[in-house]
Image 1: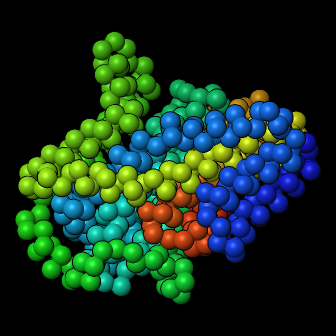
Image 2: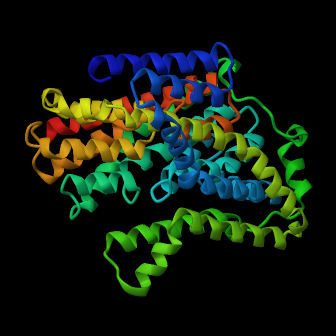
Image 3: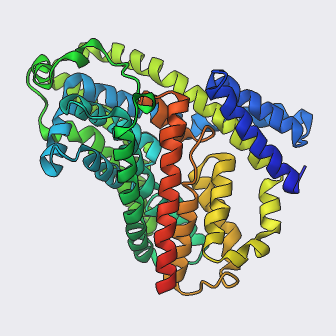
Length: 454
């Protein structure tokens, strides 16, 4: 199957999946797997290849982000149990002020996600969000989750050295103009974050039906002061930041080593340490040292066990989303879009945005949407009227904006935010999915205005 019928079938499949999860309360894992299987058969994939496609999509998630999520969750749990998350919350509030906790989380996420994938960034920073909710009575868990998610996501799609923007810049001939791409990414983030901050305040004030479920332990009923007293002496600021900051620094150094063209031992060392799995492994070691200094090392086994229990469902649902993405990628959708690229190119700067948005919604991964769109758009830059480095940098930004629009059930980030934010899938659609729509559209408005000026 190809052409318009394929697009119609895909849309119907997404609607079926969402209805199955939200209306009939079928578990997301079964809904995603069932939808993927039905879609694979309907679009005409060879029956003998479907089991392999499903297996490949499922295992691909575990090999790419599985260990990262587990290590990130373990670091987060240790930060919670030692009281380090509370120390971090104190530091953040001291800089931004207690009246703007959502702004504090958003800016923190934006900075952290420049070298870190947004999935692992949310897992790492989630304990700080929870600690702030405890410290500031009346703070909305869902509003705080939306703010954190927005900050992480904006940097993830706009600013190198995140892999997506780097790959797009290279494909579009801007490998020697990365400083300009970074500047464009910072500028493109401004309208996106401003709109997202307003949206997070809106979510915070909405009816409880879209708020995160309070599924925390009984000590959440204690006052913030009682909670702090229960930990005894809190870890120092450096010790508290180390499990988060050191992995971020290592990943940033790894990206710099690649971008700067380092060679020899320096490149090998930083390239190794900069891999997310290794960097988070170092962060885990820092967290274990923190356990030892707070005399809680005897609880490390139980914490590891609890982490595996929490991350297991997230990983399996995320892997099921990977299956749906694999089915779509194996179908003829990308070929159909490529064949009609010239016609779509008449919409100018909105062409890369729409193309990336279609691919993002179809297969779930923002990075895949960015790199695929860049490859399709590269030979068409002249046709859509963008030739100078500044203009092409805007094309990179438009691709990034499209790659945010929208995050739903086939996106691993949707499930990370929904599950770690302690929301139901239906609440996830009202918060995370709507947030990514706001992010994508608002940033695209800013990019379009810039395209008129340049």
